[in-house]
Image (tube, rainbow, N blue to C red; front, top):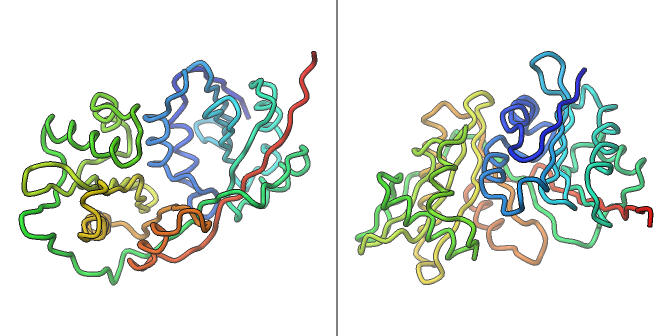
Length: 294
């Protein structure tokens, strides 16, 4: 077993290889979600250390400080003792007063390690629910309203428009056209799973970005959005169903998505449930106050 450490560009493919191998049975971060997070992180690269534990070419565990106070962790359940090593590394690699870790409820080996290291669960805060549905017996494709079309991005203008609608929906100024274009080069991105609803005027107004991991046969929705003035037209539903069909056509077995599960932001969960998604887990967040020498 060896540990490799990185500062700046993360060891994304090594991390994704473990996610592919154990998702969704262990963990809630799909390989596409990791690609999206890496492409869109807005913190300075030198504040995002990463460590990977591996045997030969096989990744067994990793820790990623997505921000100085936020640790993402994944450990193969076959090697639960590595959770201790990841937590020790992370607490030494960062300097905020508090560190938070979000895991899936079906990762008891991580919950046990976090508790043993003095982390406490935040039982009152927001959380994500893990939803999944098999890619058979899909609802039929929907015809968008007159004059609208649903399609992948075809050229530079489409990429600019796609980034613009994301910024409008999520107020995310860091998602520039250049960053979106760079994200399209990251595995497992494929344009046929990133569908945009185009208005009669030729403007991108809604989208459903799908990530399909051909190794595991699991597709993920991340992110999804509709510009405020174009809601209630069924565009999100139509694009989502189209992405489900694209996953199935590629040979996929399962689709997953992780919307908020708490009462603070309930609508997306209800929309996905109406498409046949059902909850199989949820996230739990643990925090720890770190005592630093004066």
